[in-house]
Length: 98
Length: 126
Image (cartoon, rainbow over all chains, first blue to last red; front, side, top):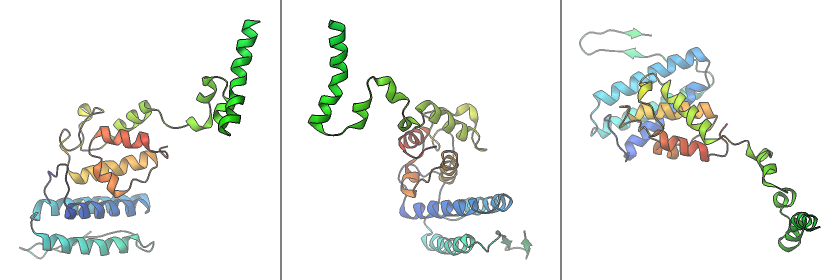
């Protein structure tokens, strides 16, 4: 998922953008404070993936899409208050739970 | 006398067209064009308003340099945004104009031009 997409978006890119849009729409229905938190986590995650993941790595991208869709479905339920992310780095085991 | 005849002719014309072509309420009741301007059908946004509001939304986007924003600017080519930013801008426009833009259309909007066109032509833009 490179930064320069130009006019023609591939099917996979469209799915990614569609998922991103879904997250932003779901965030709207939450209270303002949660909405800001959700948006910042989601945007950070998508951008990090867009820089780190190779465009041709279809398998991993599809995996991320499936995982993202499940997370989105959970987020949409009215019971869910917000997101939190777990960072596990490969060098040291740092569990930074926000 | 001639004036009276002319005025009567002008007033009578709508009635004749009613008989020939069936009920056309707008033609029938509008004796002169200025009445249509104030009808409730014209609460649609003017192009000026749409342009101003769209530019405001784009300028207040944190990653955008407001001095570069013009009605013809391309989000990715001119403003250096990526497609995720594109999605965010379209969402911000949705909120501003209280619209719901489907994914297919949103994917096509990647410049101010297209955004203004789409919103201006949307019947529900508010």
